[in-house]
Figure 1 (spheres, one colour):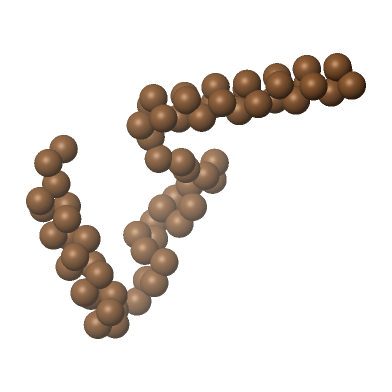
Figure 2 (cartoon, one colour):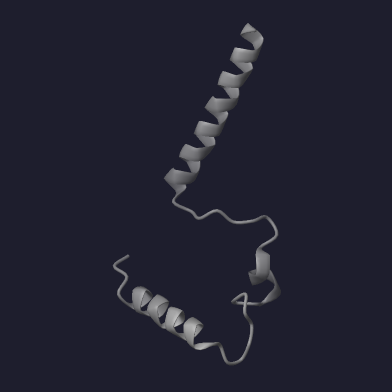
Length: 70
């Protein structure tokens, strides 16, 4: 039983250290393959004329980027 507790404690310690490392680096999580960005696709919906809902969301995102402090 002590081996199980020691192993579990070590696993928790390693997971906590990895979490602290991600927080300290202030980087967003990314996949190893690069996702759609590696294929040159900027968005999931790669259509020429997006719908009104998407246009509204893109305008809101652009407003947030324009008013960003950092």
